[in-house]
Amino acid sequence: MEQFVAVAVAHFLALLIPGVDFFLIARTAMTSGWRAATGACLGIATANGIFIAAAFSGLSLISHPTVLAVIQLAGGVFLLHIGVAFIRSKARFDPDQKPGIAQATWMKNFGLGIASGLLNPKNALFYLSLAAALAGAPPLTLIVYGAWMFTIVLAWDVFVAIALGSQRALTRLGRIVPWLTRAAGGFLVLFGLGMIATISLQLLT
Image (tube, rainbow, N blue to C red):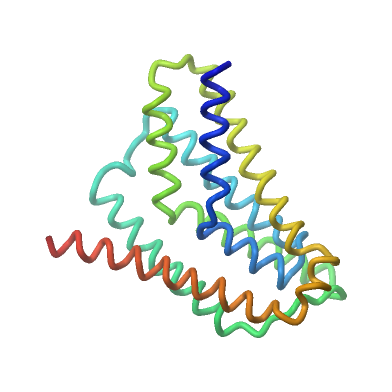
């Protein structure tokens, strides 16, 4: 029980630190509403679930320098692309959008969520370090831990989406949503440049 509490607390504290996934959810919720943003939430949780399953099953390809470098470079390019798109976007939340458009938006956000999660090496490295700390734990225990972490990631992300994309929140933030989305884009660009700069320095040394 003490081990579970320690793992749960460490995992939740890591979720509280704003990162790439947070800014993606925030921007999506503020421009498309929280329902459309749940697509990104599920995509991010799915990516985390893949990393959890890989780490807990002993599959640690991400720890190989070459694989990590490729993912880091691809992730940096992806963040730059998304960040620039956010900065240039003039999209505003439309509560009257048609169901078909909303469904298409949800699926697009789901794809962005998976890409954001899978191309963020910090997620993979976090779960690898957690798996190392849990070495020797019974398989059933690891399954329970993995299911718990997947659920918490999804629940927290949906909470963020609702908090920022509800009708009440959008009414309060309506005028500054364009500025907030540009700020989110700026953070993503900085994250992307940081990842590319890191891998570039590693290649030069």
